[in-house]
Image (cartoon, rainbow, N blue to C red):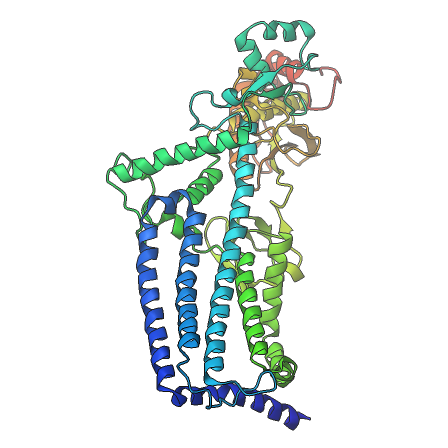
Length: 583
């Protein structure tokens, strides 16, 4: 059976091998082949110059998808025109001696040299068309993906009521705020009506958030199709950015060049992506070194959609092989054993590959996620490839390199998947001579201070809360009151334990992501130190000692601040514990 299969494949391959005799059959054929090859070389040379020219033009930056589409499509158009023209010329002038047979049989009869050469040219055309389609499809899919991201940017713009780099009050040129018919629960009807009477009051109500973090009122469109007008305004921003780059009126202080191998100017898609990653802050022209965007993204894996390119072209090749009369069943049978052997040898490689596809498809983890492996290693997902995954230590101390399949087969903890809320917990012990109720009240005060005062370098609160403190000052929310999908109440204060030398308390709040807890805990400890010093709340030394002091005198010293501590207790309470008397 194996011998018959090998013989069948040999016959099929032998038929294609007879093509070598075709060149020797006709001088005209040899000349035609030479002209065809020279023409293709000329087309490729011209195309490379054309491609380089397009990359230096403005539309390459303002319309990157169209520019890429043109670059991919222009070469096949000229190649197909050359090949088809050669084919028509050969068929018209009958350059071949049809008495010569090639020995190739596809329809039950041998083809003449003219027919064979025409079929070869048609095969090249099919391959060129297949190659073009295979590369154009990802461009179309990428364009669709970018359109979805642009729509998401528009929704973010609406939620933020404008971006920092908008022209003055652009949002309210598109939308008009309509107040609710009734006052929210957090305001009395008198307060609500008072705010409605003034422009400043209406602005306050527009920025107002309920205790559940919801805005009040609604918006009426002032223009037709706000999305299209917003896109136009964003493109105008990019035009200003581009002109600033090429004019020299930028932070680099020089004219930035287009079409460089190391790009000095962002294309509009990269410009949008940089804004998206920077919380939609304005992009400063010339602020980054040349090639910054490429270096920043060089470790990012290829999109799974690019597999489509290979799939389409392989399908075209299989179709062409079948058209030439090769029995695919026989060929598959002959190569089946070899494929099984290769599959066993590359078993782990294939597992990693399919795990990579599953991770991309189901979005199990993504670059930037904070995860903990079952080995105990804790860090950020730096890069996922179809072979290994790189996990970066949070302090940049090391990289863990693991097989990609381990992300699917092993137990991992993802701190940033869907639910990003993380508790920041601080433990503190106080002297037995302090009133625990008063201490709890002061810790509640500490937590509330932290909710207002602990911010990042951009002034955004690290602690999640039902209502952003900025709203109380009639300022836009920084986002600390967004994406809260569970009922939280912060700060939390608990009396944990009677320790050997201290009363142990715990205070915790919820922060926006895993990394935010570290700065938050540090700042809370700073505030605890300030408040404890202010109210003479004493932290005992963590050692055992024989107490020889005057307890009565020390109690009198502590009692001096008792009235101030009582005021704090009455004002802040003890978290969710109400009443209880003042002891």
